[in-house]
Image (cartoon, rainbow, N blue to C red; front, side, top):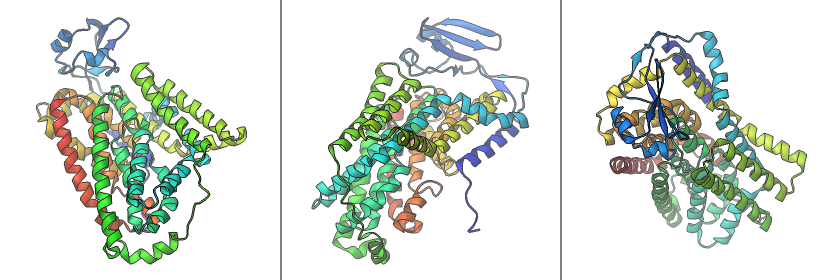
Length: 498
């Protein structure tokens, strides 16, 4: 049993695709009428099995179709994909998907998700260039040096900055490089390695949980849900601030207790071994030069420009991808990376995220199978019958745990987004809440479980620090419970005031 490994996200998605193909032979085929908004003509297009009809773009039209969405959600661009019209579901002739369709589905999915995939790959290249320059490492090392003697500020700054990285561009796997740099600093400050682990891993987890501009979760999920990614951004920003504050208090409380009484450390029995492993490690050569400061500034400005472009200039994936490509080239020039080396590093960085790109394509292929097999709307129809009339607060909190459970099998945030959003997001229309609340429950459900998810990054991180999973659970479970209860409360409040 010890040699049995949990399958990868790609394999899990392939298995799910096979099951979906089988379901097209079992689940009845059917489809809703759909409604889309034409910005140029300021009209609605109603698509039925009998053809396409043009309707006046007005709230009266929406009310007559029993669509529980304000007109401004369409006119301001929040909803730009066709939506299902309630109570128009019709049974159709079955179109089961066979072996050929199953084999083709990942390829079709990759083609359909090409815009998102290219964004992911270009960001991967940019992160590869950033890691090569040493700007990330130098920035953190500089902070640690400046704050010497005020060690509690190290905890606060590291956790906060990594959370910012998590919420903006999904800083997660990259944090593994930070452990050898930061653990000696925390040990020298009379903290234990658990404090360093918590500051880095919890910082990354709470940041990605409360993603704001993260292309791998909020943007992809919003795209799959058919809304603009800036919709619901204010709530996510508030959650980021409050949840990060809760995490900081939790880590500081433990850190102060260990600093005063080392024997109260959860990993006290490993104190000597860990100090021997990390205690003599120094990184005095890591200096934050003016060049590296400029590199960090350009990296941050890529996200600032992206936010401005999407929110004010109607940018989407092509423009966003171009910003990150230009940013990588500028950073490569400032770092004086040779052309041949730049290409090699950039391609290597992109290849590091190729797995994420394939996950997006394979997951989108599952949607293709469901759509071609005409079962997507059938599943939506029966799900809507269950959720219609359900209490809003109960609905959002139930989804929180559904997404958390699913993330054990699909730990990829991007894969989860494109797989579940087309089915889950329209359910919000039947309950009478904004689709951004579905995106939020997806992020928070996955994020909360990420603190302890063995199929995620935690086991790899623990292996570096030489801390057992059981000890991590003992440390982090009270925080997970606190964050879960707090998130449920906030979701309930915002569900009713939204």
